[in-house]
Image (tube, rainbow, N blue to C red; front, side):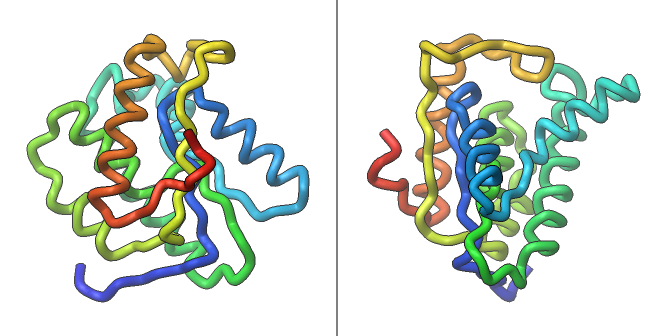
Length: 168
């Protein structure tokens, strides 16, 4: 990957699990903004429905590959967007996940993070213990959610993004 594809109209909302990202995205959509649903959750739902194993508690390498390809596909679909569009997670989230699971082959993910660029300001939501719940797709403990959030901050900063000042 060589040429950078950048869209300042694409804003990432990310953070640890259970921080309320999806609720924020739904509220933005309700208010008339363009939004993009979380790719990872869609993959998990599809895999559970079809009894596939490309899930965080199964074949993590395959799950990561699916997240990367779907995240790139989502970005490319939106690359011409001119109005503010809010994305529930971004490509650097895949890199964060790959690092958390200690995936050794991350160069392709790093290249995608360099090539496909969102608005530099990222809305980073910290986990919120009062509202944190596990479900069929979110199995982490609250402490694990905090660790994911901290890793997410490091990855986005490493990728050259700035954490939104009002995000905690």
